[in-house]
Amino acid sequence: MPQIDRGHLAKRMMSLDPRPQENSFKNEIRAFREGAVGGSSSVGGGCGCN
Image (cartoon, rainbow, N blue to C red; front, top):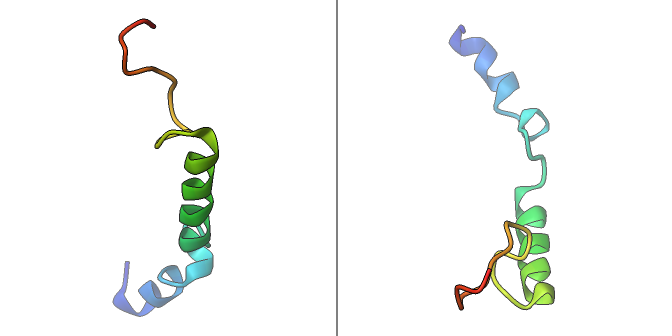
């Protein structure tokens, strides 16, 4: 890709996540609401009784 065209792809609108700070904050709030870090990922406990 020519260097002159890279400016268009570097714009925030072209990124996969247009609001990375906002989504990071929402994920942090979700983790607190779930009671554990990683509340939006796979389930599992620390006791080994799964």
